[in-house]
Image (tube, rainbow over all chains, first blue to last red; front, side):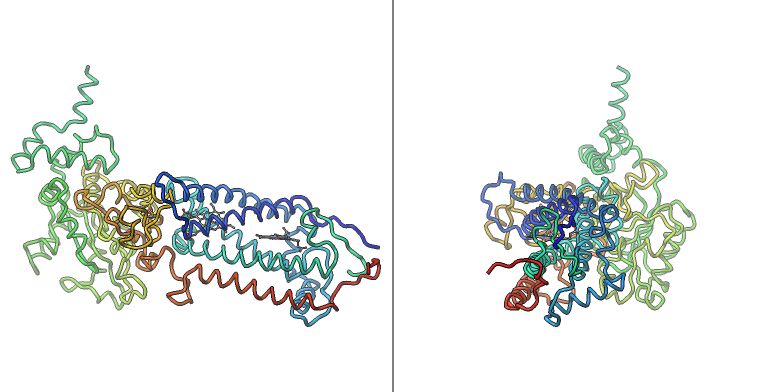
Length: 217
Length: 374
Ligand code: HEM
Ligand code: HEM
Ligand code: SF4
């Protein structure tokens, strides 16, 4: 019998979609900030001004969302737990890593069947959460410079003195492209698993439920 | 009535002081202007003008020893050319500069003896000013004066000073001599003399108005002005160039010069896309400007190169690009080209994987408990 299992609790789904919306807004405005190429004939306009305003607004939303998700790793169910993101910690996790890798490289017929994240996806997510953290830290370090005596500047001062202005800016810029690369791969993989596992992976990030056949586990 | 009188007295420069400056050949108008520029630069209330005027007159003016090591004399030049109402007369002539290789009349042993005399007579009371960085490789042999290494000299002179002022980016942070690969292992004054009270006035060159203001502050209050975590006085380095720039309205509007001499450049648009480092640089150039407030780089049409930031030669280059080069990639590869490459490669790789997976029919999960259509 197929079981309907509640896998992604609402905070996981909510933060996921907040992140998606913020990243799209941040990447679009960020790429403009990095290379402003809209022609603006009127001096009274405020194009860069708005772009930065939107960027900073979504930056706050994104940061809160990431922090909530990180906290949920210690509160939520086993699929949301921080352990799920580190399959390399257990023996079973290792076999899933190898199994999934072989599946992706066409060396194995069936993908190892798991309820939560597949092992490779989980590792990719750990890396993505790391990128999120770097993006938030470098972002707020750059942001704080408008007021060197302000709160943000005092919080981020160690990063500025350690890496310097321009390195943080370049890092912030390059991670944008890595996140765009991740999004392409991620949506593809979600589609692939949805098609092949036939357990409702794609809709699970909307509704939270997956359809699991215990015999496959 | 009495309060009013006191306020006037506080704000005014006493008549006898003005007269004395007139006999020295500085008009009262120029002297008043000098005092007001100093109060404004130091962000002091106007009522302090009288106090400043008195302090410059006082008898407790400390002697100054100005030393130059790995530098280009640009800071000396900037200071000598300072024609902030005859700041040269007011500060140079009136402060007793007992040692300064470029301007002193004495030479050789005579000069060294004068320096030694000042150091001994005014131990703990004189001001040391250092221009240029200090080489440390091979025992410091890359810069010696009078047979002694810069490292030894700076340790002795700054170690016994009331205060040390590092002028210019080289003395403050190592500057160009310390740029990678730093063959002489040049270091800043604060690194060379860790125990000394050092105030940094970076800039390439420093702004002479800021040096004069710092000295005036010392004369007026008996101490150097408050500094930030990099040892720079907050009155001069407390704000980002970008946040005080006269082209900022064009930045916010989205109007950028795309090349030198193009239509945007000629209309005074923002220099962001020409590599301006104003958004990374803390300095009061936009308000104080250089050469008697005449101009500063961005006003003249050239982006800021961040010359007063630590290691600017390594971190702010390329000067005409906004972002540094990505390490490990060629000079021509910009961050965006590499990023676009990453995104495109991902799309192509997973696209190909998708085609292969779609054609693959043998990998579906077990579907036997489900009834399948067709
Ligand atoms: C996924 C998240 C984010 C993405 C994709 C992103 C993207 C970008 C990009 C591409 C730039 C242009 C960099 C350049 O070339 O100079 C930028 C600038 C910036 N970002 Fe972000 N960003 C993100 C999150 C944040 C966060 C959380 C903050 C925190 C406040 C932030 C603050 C800034 C600031 C202050 C700038 C510089 C703006 C300026 O120079 O006026 N960003 N961002
Ligand atoms: C910028 C874009 C995106 C980012 C950064 C992103 C990131 C993530 C992360 C970090 C997770 C792990 C969830 C968690 O445990 O918190 C996840 C899961 C998931 N995401 Fe996204 N996501 C993005 C866009 C999308 C889109 C557009 C879709 C669907 C069309 C999608 C579908 C899913 C699905 C189905 C899962 C669950 C995967 C599983 O079962 O392992 N994502 N995503
Ligand atoms: S010219 Fe430079 S400092 Fe001025 S607004 Fe533009 S980027 Fe900022």
